Image 1 (cartoon, rainbow, N blue to C red):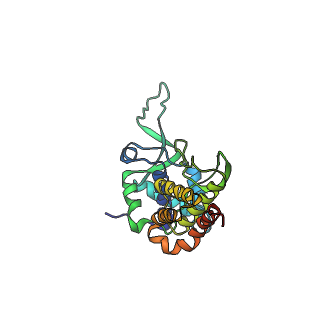
Image 2: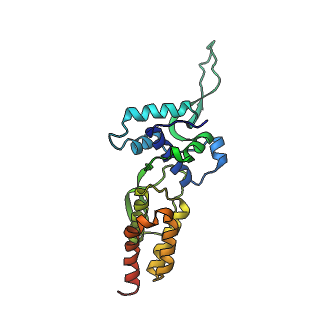
Image 3: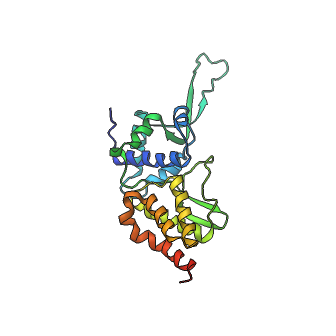
Amino acid sequence: MTAHLDEAEKQILGALLVDFNEQELGANELKKGYKGPKLTELNQAICTDDDITQTDFDIAFKDLEKKKLIKTGPLRAYENQPGSNIFIAGMYSLREYVGLTELGYKTARKAPNRPANSQRIVNNVHISGGQFTNMQLAAGETITQRLDSTSGADGDILVKLIEILEKQGQIVSTDQRNELIAAIHQAKEGNGKTAKSLLEKVCGPAWDSAQPVMWPILGELLKQSLGL
């Protein structure tokens, strides 16, 4: 049975799906549980304006838990008082972070449940070569960001390209980010055809609308490499 989701629920699942993909996790993590973004960071990402209020978020989050689409953690065993006649067995959640369940992942992947524009966790991350403010990255202490080969101006260009795609409603995967990095490098080497091909591959169906905005950015790198 397909779950009926309101916009707040879609946004929460969409943000968690982005985080899950960025961490390059798989079915085992969905089954056993994994460390997703902090609840406070997810809240800040979703409640960005009057469209989704704090009350909307709280109700949506509670409903998603009831539907077993998300789960929180870490879990801790109940502490029973010595000498008490009441013994409670089991675990409870400290509700510090949240992640998708198997059912939540399947639900988030279905087209009707995808929000028009998925919100993503926003962090200020320092990467060697520069400070990237408001760059949209997945949260979580265990995640490894794949921006090792970019710094300074190249990193700024990568951020711009990703932001353009996200405004088109596209979720940029790790592989696609690496292809954008490759496109930037090809443009700097003067290989315009290869750079454009890589960019078009990443954009997919959004290429026609994104090309007029994205290609001029690499076009400038191409001109500089050719001394124009």
